Length: 304
Image (cartoon, rainbow, N blue to C red; front, side, top):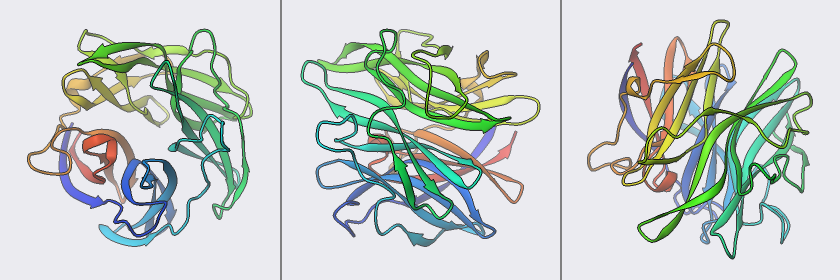
């Protein structure tokens, strides 16, 4: 694959109290014939994330047509699993509804934090209809601290989810850092899920310790997964894998060929890639430094 970086698109500009900085985990959909809506997580002055969006002109992705004025939904009640932030990872169309799967951020005492996955459902106008107060991916014996980064597709009447899961930490430069793999599982209703998934992307060398939100593209013949690799000395870099089913994946990170830039918003980290096809062009949105606190940009696939 050969990707050409087109450049930076957007970062929050302190225009509202709930969206002071960041434009994290870009997740695009076709909003209408001329518009791509990219769902993002914006941070307030305390670093607490809430979901919003920017609408981009399909003919010119640097042309921002609209920015959300209020969050699509809010963080959880005090004491809940998502009281310290909501990180939207997947927006799944099911009939006339959108299922927003997100990672809820919960601060710990003996550990730094936990990430568990929640669900909010809107109508096709993105008006909230239901938000679950407890995780749809709750802690389990096999996946104790992390069941986050959920990405879900609805295919042939089945909800299919890839997510990150783990139960341990590693000390890197005197800081606790999580260890997790990418796993897969299915649900018939999108709400009730198994207590554990099947591992499909594993840590392969001693310099890796986890992965970021997987983004899966499905067609009749195979599946393609775009994800982020947590590397001990570098932060996030982009990875890629292929599969002929949902579970058995072959890592082909060497095909990604998209790395950090020089002296730009993504010169230290590149992460949280997502894919959308626009007028026969394959577009990748992605975050840069500090997990997306410096905003997001895009690249175009020019050679498969």
